[in-house]
Length: 243
Image (cartoon, rainbow, N blue to C red; front, side):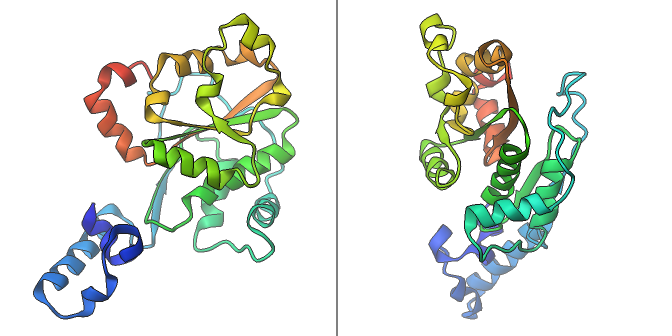
């Protein structure tokens, strides 16, 4: 993965000094060419790739989108201005991907981009649009591989969205806790780790969501750094296999 990042992200992200690639040494030229080949192999020459895969084998029959919203990109622009300020502008392909996430009938959209492409924005703006246009409370989950990334996402999203930790919803089978939490108390986004994602408590939460919060909508389940989930599942199959 080192090669895939080194020619794009520089020293601040991965301790790779980009200026070294032009210094002329053999080792630096090899590093630079390796990076370019890796990017090409990943299909990221344009900075990103995405797919709306056929997931009929993993999505239960009858699953469909609840929300019906105006199919206009104006809402995404408004959300961008609200979250990032008046100077907000979509960069290369960002509007296209946001539109796919918001309007596509596909239950799964996979996105792979180089660092700094704006992946956080790609999920934030559709969530804001749903919050504005859907008449019921919409709740999303965002799962990251590491605790430090969970904290980072809580901080980044929390400026304009109501964000909490998914662990705060665990144990809702407790009658007293369930009665003490109403729909208005729910956050827009709940962040958690892969360990939370694979836990029986999360499975119980999602399986019984309609029972716990009957007049709400589960909107997005975002898997951050999804390639890490493959590794986690390989080493901890007993945890993730029920998912």
